[in-house]
Length: 203
Image (cartoon, rainbow, N blue to C red):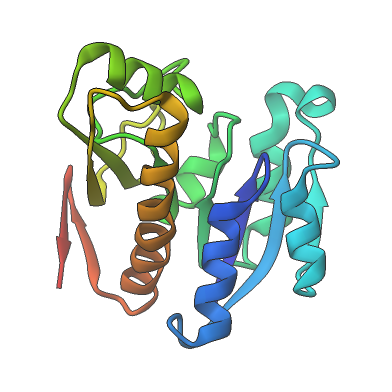
């Protein structure tokens, strides 16, 4: 069984896409072992509870700079892959080393555009619209010591219209996120992903 830990910070729609992929059989031989939130009271925790998945809170306000260390204690030796699904805290230190090329994140733009420090949530879409891009999308990438800087696994694109609001663009991209994240997990769980420096090769 390929075991997954999912990190969340909010409503958990990306988490739900993985739960659904497991429940429908799209993700075969996979199980979600833990959902970890850096904020208490978020709806993602309810999604875990509703699906009988162990849920944990490592409150960012309490643990501050040691959140990554607490995640390492909780998940090391227990999961094969960590999935950041709307996770807003920066991962660092020994966690990155111990889980090299075993942590993935989804970002709501086509990296390297509109990513890095301070680029999260609605701000990403506002910046894309301000810049006047004609396409945007989402990126699933491995997590390294930088911010949104790890090797890219896959990307999905959407058109951007002149009359779009940030909310409309976000909704369009979110639809693709819910396809991209389970697809990336599937490829990794089936051993079809190889990393060669910055280049990710899909078998």
